[in-house]
Amino acid sequence: MTGAEILVKTLIYNKVKFLFGYPGGAVMPIYDSLFTYKKQIKHILTRHEQGSIHAAQGYARVTGKPGICLSTSGPGSSNIITGLADALIDSTPLLCITGQVSSNLLGTDAFQEIDIIDISIPVTKWNFQITKPDQIFEVISKGLNIATNGRPGPVLIDITKDAQNKEINKVIRFPTKTTNPNPNPNLQVKKKELQKVIKTIKKARKPIIIIGQGVKLANAEKKLKQFAEKTNIPVASTLLGLGILNTNHNLNYGMLGMHGNYQNNILILKSDLIIAIGLRFDDRVIVNINNMSPKTIIIHIDIDNYEINKRLKSTIYLLGNLTNNLNALIKNLNLKPNSTDKWLKKFNLLKKVESKYVKEKEFLKQQIGITMPEVINYINLYKNNNCILVTDVGQHQMSASRYFNFTTLNSQITSGGLGTMGFALPAAIGAKIGAKRRQVICIVGDGGFQMTIQELGTIMQYEIPIKIIILNNNFLGMVKQWQDLFFNRRFSNTKIYNPNFTQISKAYNIKSKKVFIKDNLKPNIKKMLKSKQAVLVEILVEKEYNTLPMIPTDKSVSKICF
Image (cartoon, rainbow, N blue to C red; front, side):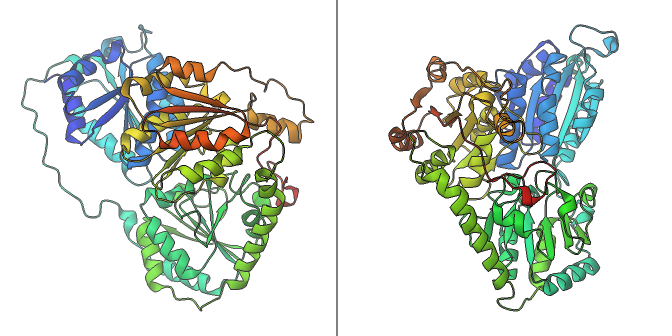
C-alpha cells in the first residue's frame, strides 16, 4: 500500500466516518485514496479551510468524537490556524492532517511550503511531521488518542508528499483493538482531599457551584445534577457550561461573568464557598479577581493540573475525572435539610431585580423595532426539544446564551475562549452532520456571517437542513456597544453596509425571508422551525441595543451596567 492508502485505512480502522477538507497539490494522493474508500468514509467539501476546521469542531462538540480536518500545504494549512487556536482553548478534540512538500524539498522555500509544525506548536496539544509511510499508522493512532485523552484538544499531523506516494512492500496488519479499563491515572479519587472537600461543604452557609464545559466533556451532566440536588446549592454556569443543567431547573441561576446574570455576579462575592467544576476561571467569568474575598474558600475540581491555581488560588482541589469525583462526593456527602434555604432566597430576590431592570425592558418595548431577546423568545416557543443552538460571536451570542431555553443535554455550541467570528455557520454544518436527527439552529450576526458566508455552498451541495437566523443591526454590534458605553459614542468603523442576504441565500438554492416588522416575527420563526429544509431568515433588529447587564473589563461588580 501507499502511504496515502495506509492513512485512509488507519482512519477507517479508528472508526472515522466523516472528514472535512479542501483538496490541493500536497494532498492529492490522499484524495485519490479517499476516492477508493468513499463508501467507508465520507468527505465533506467545504468552501474554505477555515470552514472545514470549524465544521470539524461542530462535529466533535456534538458527538464527543474527534473531528477530522484535511488541508493542503502552504496557505491551505495556515488557513486552519484560527480553528486550531479555537479548539485548543475550548478543549475540542480534532485531528488535522496537512499535506507538505516532499521531504527533499523541506527548507528550500518550495512552492506552497510553510513550516506548519513550528507555526502550530502554540495552538495544538501535539503535532508531528511524517516523512516516511511506515510512520503513518502509529502516528495517526497516537494523534487520535492524544486528541481525546485527558483534557481534549487539537492535534496536527503534517505528511510530506513523498510519504503519501511511497509504497510499502510488506503486509500491513492493523492490530486487534483492546480496551484498557483505566488508561488515565487521574481517574482514581484521592480520599484525603475528598474528605477535606466534604468537611468544607458541610460547614458552608453561602456556597455556590460554578460549572464549565469540563462537566460536559466528562459526560458528567447527570452526576452534576445529582450533586446539586443533594446539596441544594445554587448553580451558575460559564458560557460553555450552558446546557449542562436544564434552564428551568430550580437551582440553575444562569450565567456568570461579564454578561452573566445579576444574582450570580453579586452573590459570588458574598459567598463563603465556591465549588468550581470543570472550568478555568477566565477573565470573562471572574472579571476582576481582586474583588474576591480572601475569606472565600475555593474548591476546584478539574482534570487539567495546568488550570489549578492559574488565575485564582484554590483552597482545595480535586484533580482527575469529574464523573468519579462527583460520584464519590454524592455517595459520601450528607447535609442537613434546608441548610441553604436562606441563601437561595437571596438569589431569587436578585433574580427579580434583574427581571425588573433588564428583562422587562427588553421584552415589553413599545417601539416598532425588534430586539434580540424577542427573537430568542419566539425560538423557544417553536424549537424542538432536542435542538442544538450554534452561535457566532457578539451581541447575538450573549442574548441567545442568556435567553435560550436549554432543555436537553449537549445542546450548545459556540466559540467561547477565542471568540471567533465566522465560527457559527460551518460549526452548524458539522453539528448537523454529527447529529442528523437533531434540529440545529445557527444564530449569527451580520458581521460574522460574512466571514464564512461561502459555506452556504456546502449547505447547498450536501442539502444540510440547518436553520440560519441572521440578527442584522447593520453594525458590528458588540464593538459598537463598547464604543457606546466606554468611548463616548464615538462609533469608529463599526457601521457596516450589508448585501442583500436573502438574495444571496436564494442564489445557493436556500429558502430565505427578511423580517423587519415585529408582527411578522412570530409566524416566520414558526414557519422556519417547522421546515424540513435549510432556511435562512434575516431579521432586522434595533441598532440602539446593548446586551445588559455588563461588567466592564477589570471593574468591580459595583460598576455593573444596566
